[in-house]
Image 1 (cartoon, rainbow, N blue to C red):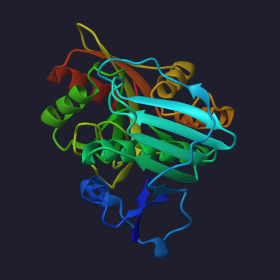
Image 2: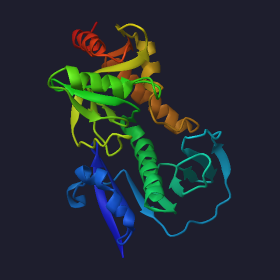
Image 3: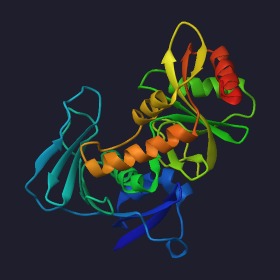
Image 4: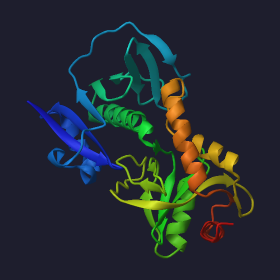
Length: 296
């Protein structure tokens, strides 16, 4: 017997359908804060159904990544009106998940294999992909960032992996009273007429922080390593580039690229953006806080 659960993330509703006895249900605790009653919600932005098998479709490569040791792999193919995503937790391992979706990312079918953890990997990545691309036309961005909350505003820290986003968040948490962590890897940002808001999500990297809360964005800060601590306000075009480089998107699809451009432009216009050249120390948190609160 199949079972369906409905979730609401950043105001967007989606559902997952799997066999009731599927053990992966027990590994989905991170989604519990986002469970919602489908009878009280609007139409879902997408539906994902886990299937025992998928048709073997002829396919053309759209985005096939070069294998990187130690990193996961997601290859993208097209087959007419169907997009195919093949996933593996490591580039050196075989595919453990295959996602078929329409080009609007409204209907997805997933086949996964292996143990509970590999199935969890495939399911999480499929949900993130479908969420990011189905909500992009609605002024929504899934960001690669760590987010703290202070005095009712959310502060996003961006940067390449290993540059210290999470470390900088920790400096705020340890040294600035009243600071809380909202999400440590994949928050959601939405652009509205009068403001930009940041939301917690079920996806937070290695840090288990799955909070169904949202706040107006106080600032977006790109973290760069340096032997000193200095915060600088970015001009508009550099703000756009900073936000754009940290968004989830399928840029080989013009439709997705166009709506991404519109959403990123809205964020860059409405949310102050900074670059923080810094050390991993308490002073960096104090310098950054002063800059973002004073708008310097």
